[in-house]
Length: 412
Image (tube, rainbow, N blue to C red; front, side, top):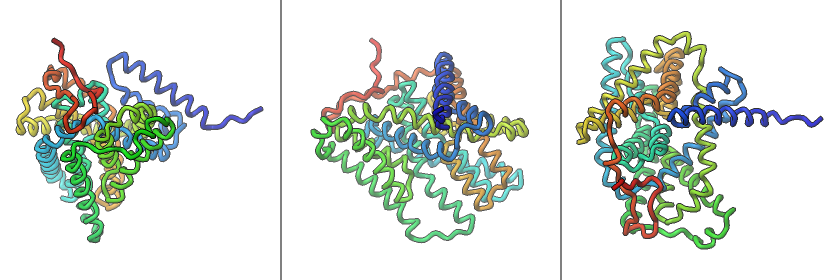
């Protein structure tokens, strides 16, 4: 009798669970993100115990890199550059307001100032993966709201670096000049590269004609571009996902997006799914049931406070109240980078084990429930965002690029 490889039933059960949940939720008009997280909950240590969460977390990182790479290929670079005010000012105000609110709460609860700042940082970050996946599924990435979200999320990813530096200082760790200088140098280089592309009007991919005629080479060239830039930004102390996004922008400038989409899209779907499965595995059912009231109240509070605070900021920046509340709902969940921040806080002694587990549970639940909250808020505001759509057209600076699959043509 032939021995059964233990990985075979894991893959079979995993794909079956995701397929069944995906079909059910799609029928109910909900995104696949929820199916992936619930699958992680069912397959992890709290359920069937079939998966290794460490391996999934590493594979999930691949998914985030590919997701940001694809989003970069669909971005209107001139529009992104011109939208700097909302991205930078909006994100800065959001972080400051989040910290102030938590410091006030921490004062009432007699928390140390360092702990309050940590939790302020944690709730100020939204999930790039969740928000962009929802916008992508709903063809809203190139709406006015979608472009605002893209800019804010990218600045949030960059803001993680100074947040980590501040938290390390709270823990008494002294940082060398090189550790402080590397992220700054990397940011300057990226901004310079993007500015050069905008000014030049596009670039050419070496050996482009030969690559277009070789299917197998195309796959590996696309992977080298995406993960090569992810590696470079990681070496500079920046987010690897941010590097993949820049790589997508460069690919769009070379007008080679068609064959890269065709070859890498199946990889992206699988690895993004694995990332959200990992998020689902972080939810401990036993701990959740033991502290259900506290976690439930705090999760609702996160949704409400983040939605209202972000809505006020977007209204201040010139959006209407309907668009502002929808934007606030999109940013209402706590992002994946917050897992990193709270882990650093635990290591530095800024938060105890119980507080760490409470925070992890809340982050995972906001990621799971945010599609429902976003859908609810959109129905409440009754906003029609199609009239704010930014068509993606063939720009003079990027000849031959063609229309994006996310562009929207109004009905006559």
